[in-house]
Length: 334
Image (cartoon, rainbow, N blue to C red; front, top):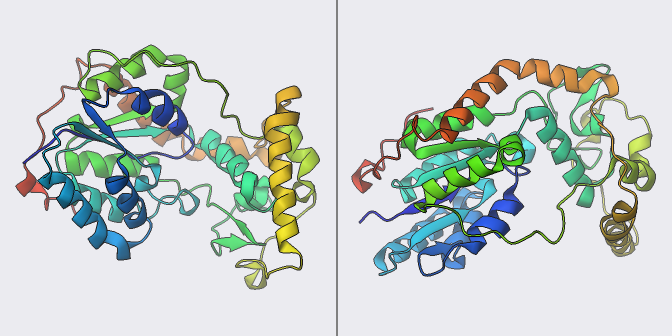
């Protein structure tokens, strides 16, 4: 039996906190079942490890066998893939989600690629090793390079020019139908918030969203000044890594003290320094990184803008009826 299902698949760093806390959490629990642990936790595990797929199938089967007729809302940005691997695993997660929820409506938020990369770097610094943004984006000697390992110099890193935002949308649109996949841009959430919120209400089957509470605090990344002052590793030059520079760093003496110091630094920056002095600048200016990234994705970004514009105009996209469960195996080939 088909149910009403809405799945928010990410991306990370595109207003997920706002959606989860300020939108989905405010929905009427008599009509909406939002991120129930018995379904969400198995999904989180299965989208990170294929070995957990049996457990999530059992969890969804149990949910379907129940008499719960509320709209199921799942918000899990990792469904779109591992952000530090350019979401290269998005297709296997799509296959699983399509199998489990063939009737779903998909909500997908993206962001301008250069801004997303900078935000990902700042997020990495919260708990990761302090390396310059050039190391994080594999930018050496004036050019972006393929990464040679998941970790270099003990730090996670990303290939700046292999992001798959549009590929993810196309794959979901092909699997579910364009009329059931809603692409939004974080920039539109900021500049055209009322239009985005109304369209989210349409997706959820509501005339309008509930009144949203006022956010008590901003979910801001570290300021550039805080990064420069309190992460000295970002100020030193790093050569292009070789085979001996890959993998995690070996355990160090007194590592527990280092962890405590990092937590103290994080607390000081977030709740002290950045609240008093938030001085920021564009970290991608150096070496012309932003210009190169924007030029690389210019055509893709233009198409994303056009798709997002269609999604914001309800006269151009009519919500269709859910697909039948027997269609679950119609996922297009890669």
